[in-house]
Image (cartoon, rainbow, N blue to C red; front, side, top):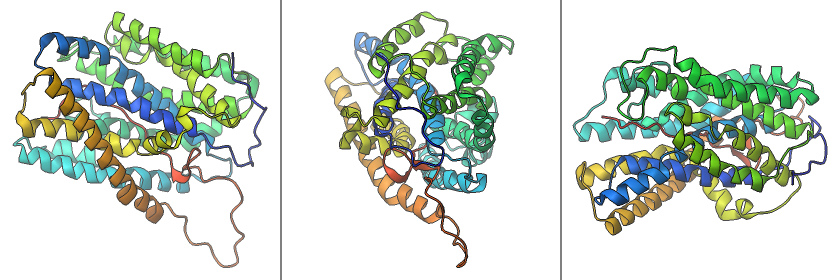
Length: 409
């Protein structure tokens, strides 16, 4: 059954928190870790290695789409018409750059110690998060290569104040039609990529590096998913009817994953799961508006969800350089490989928790605070900070990201 909505939420009202959309981030990031674990090829048993690769092969693609849509949804949920663009950009920069710079520096040192030092052409664009605008795989997948999606997010944030202003002008009864149009555009992206050069070929999957970059990495293309998230948030905020509930929408992800395995590589990256994602996120938000609890709203899930940005930035470094420390390219028996992956997963979460508490949150408090108001100025209104996480209160929502199937060398 569809999730019921109480009706439109006033623009000036403080919006309900969305703990489900924080808790689900933990579930979304697990397939990203599993995919990158497979890139390390730790299993010595060929049958186990092939089964594991088949199992985790498409989950990361879906996770990336979900994170981008979720980013647009959560930021729109916390935004108000009277919020200024400069304050929004300052808060987003405070959220993203301190952790990014720290992991960028860590990757720089680790690569140098491994004898595969990054070049200036890789390091400088990566530092400023503009490397995804370059179709050269050695650039857009450089250093801590998962930062490619943070580069996309920076572009999303730059465009958000203008995008949300336009989307607020759409009449509520037309929001679903606009949503369908954006989904159609996402579905057609691989067809547009066929117009690009078919050389050089990808070292994985099929298609060329140019085509993969356009479909999967190029920020203006991935902006479509962010815009979809903005539209979905407006649908819930304006009290539009939702077609299905959270459980049916989640179940639709299973056939979507199976379909992705049957499609040509480029078509399986972003297209199969976009409809289930577009149904699931507003349904979860509707449950939160109605104060309905689930395991996603439990304290452990919300806590881990709030650590996701830090986990995302460190997990690839733990996997890659941890494997190098044990012997690059080395494989292990199935029990040992499974134990090593579990240990890496645990270590990455522990490190994420420390970074969230001692780097991420202090940086946000220090850098995202509004400028001191003059003594005779009126106090701010009751509307929420647009960078605040609707699930956990004053802590800004984590940056959302995923992984690209490449290894920095």
